[in-house]
Image (cartoon, rainbow, N blue to C red; front, side):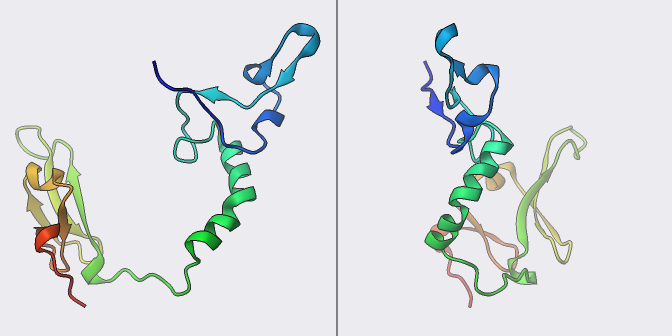
Length: 138
């Protein structure tokens, strides 16, 4: 049986819905939702409202803890490579896997094994290599 967990929204118990009501008729109370899975806040909030409530209360603390961005992040030709696939783009109805540079629209074909390899790194030339052989260029 799956483990039930509580919604992490700090105001979840304050929203008046039937599934939050608990207790006998003469002593009703609202409780935080408890489910086996949630869809918001990476599986920790029951609704977008609870997700927004969490961020309003804890978002600044999270940024302070993990650090603010102090300079812009830049997408260049060298770091614009991403793995991707097209569904049913081959004659046999299978997937066509590739690495693509989002700035230059270059595409380099991959095998399915290369695509599924989680230890693979895409270098700044669009070549796939494994983490153990990767030396980043600066």
